[in-house]
Picture 1 (cartoon, rainbow, N blue to C red):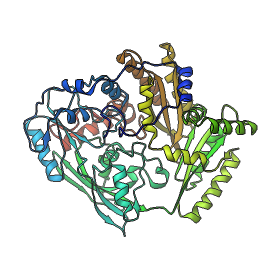
Picture 2: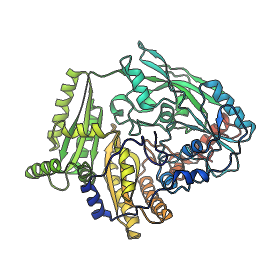
Picture 3: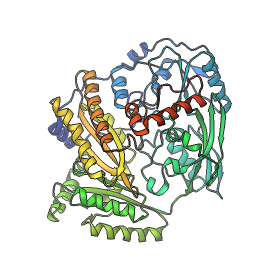
Picture 4: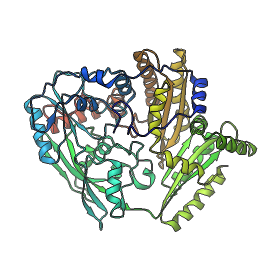
Length: 530
């Protein structure tokens, strides 16, 4: 069963190794381990629903609780303390387009609001009901989870929007195909959610980001239905698909999508490389991108993330053995770990491995083979479960990310962690900030930041510290001209910074598009624009 106030399946644990607990206590101190709120008591606080009866709508308190919050740090504080705030007044589970149309009319009639719900994995507040007098209906698309059509000649699949990552891959693999979209939230997130937030999978360099995979689909909106044909290319005016990508449920409910799929690759492997320092590693991944070497992914951890990742693995003897070997080879405390993948035809993959090997040698890297790559591959979708263990041990964890041109990237990758650490120092607190580059492009890369800090005895204090760090990091990102979000979308948390990126005219264009699709403003109000 899925956890109601944490990450993932409640039968899966990712214990915090004793060595890691000691490391965190030494680096940032010991956090508060107050017990979580009791589910039974939380359910007693769910208010009465304002929605009239409807055959497709349940007002059962537990369903409303499960759909009240996502996975952002404020959501965790709310769920762990039981101070949820706003709840949806009801939850519906449509089975098709007609149900969605019916629910939109129902919400219009009762002057309410409608929030489309995929996997509930948003880390920036996409699905949270606002503080409004209007009744709110959450439309959960999880019953719309089927592969409807597969064109094996054109490599196009029509899939319902509520289908989760594992279910997409299971259904496609029966026919020898894959979508290849693997965000860290893969276990729970859905196709519709990926499109609505412009998601990027871990191997996007090979398979493409979701905007590359999204070929067409069907949208239900208050203004009517919209069909987007899956054309390979078109010069017939602006591409309307781009309106839905990143639209965060403001323009309608995407009920199905046509996506570009490919045959399951013959070969795939992941490798680990150590570099003497961060700059050598950045030079290597930039060269890989600009020489267009067909790797499937490249993730370069800075020295702090490299050290912490090795310690959190819990494999003390192995880590010590690796450390001794690297020291003998003059790899010191500034060493950085690159995980890169090669995917595709086996013969071509051998060639790619040779080409990447040349870059690694040129940048003084040490290729250690598949050991580190296998460890990453094994935990790639398990690592979110560590969040549960860290919270129980007294630590809060959050992530943020951006993308910048290569010329600005080194300075920004140093400044963003410093901004986070600086505001904690002012509060006499310590924070552990980790950084890696991923999703490399010819002209730049994404910077992905993870930061851990102590939970405070007062949950509001924990939330206050988070707000300060998030604001400091976001302002630093904007100062360097980076995007406020490379793959997590906007939601509540990034909305204050969106105007800087889009400009006054851009924000007004978004408002006008909202009015065109949704004249009465019933869909996910407050997201993207007011």
